[in-house]
Image (cartoon, rainbow, N blue to C red):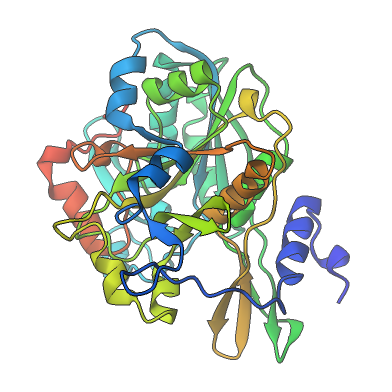
Length: 402
């Protein structure tokens, strides 16, 4: 198969060829350290304190908020990149959509609606457009870009047409990044019998490699399109610009609602230490699922830093840092294998390269349980959406986090 003829975007071609090159590599199985077997893999809940202090560039949002809050407009171009591509097939919303005359689902962000006094019932994706336009009260310039697939793009284009009056000198739209459906593996060979996207790692890779908006002091923010909280406040951006922080991965203190997602960990290899993420699937493969789920919830544990998939990039601070590809995830779908990569893996693999030269590329910003709703309200199932809408203490309002 000639991939150059099939994949027209050169960055996506480079990304997919990189995943394909790992297909036959044997990967070391990640095992979490236990009292009986010290594997050198330490999620933050059990990491030695001295190792944490020395090797983990960790910051508390509550401290950043206190030290870097400002009422002034931050002199930067905030580049908001919202991921709308995923179908979210695990979230059954067929009955819910009938209320809005819909039979075919799009993405979660285009299918879930909130009630507003000013705009009536609007989808979460539409609310993201309105919310982003209001951010000009906090940032000198705001640019919103949709990260989509071909099925979702026309839906969002119609929403933008509806709200084109919001566009102006300080608020603009950058052309959507469209994630292509790519070949899969069958019987050890590439095939087009089944096509599938190659994971959200492409958005982490492409943000560094692709075109950027015009503007000074660009800070990009990649977040989930269905999460109205996936946008930074002035304190975070002001801190990154002031302290020359290149990349921030936002985490939150794990609760008993956070059993499935990844946890930030330190991995010791000889005399070197690297950042990694331990995922549920890895723990399951290693026979450590119950142990993984309880980390950070046991009485003697420290906080487990739960990955939110919210990432910020300060382009002023990148310097000569090299960006590398994510680790390959083989997603088995019947007789086909989808080749995928994760957003966090792009960043942490790049951080590993930087550490080889004595630099730290990725910083962790942890938000405590009390403030997590400001930046993280995941919707994995309809119960999550109902909880967010009905929980008045969260004050769900599309302008709440301006």
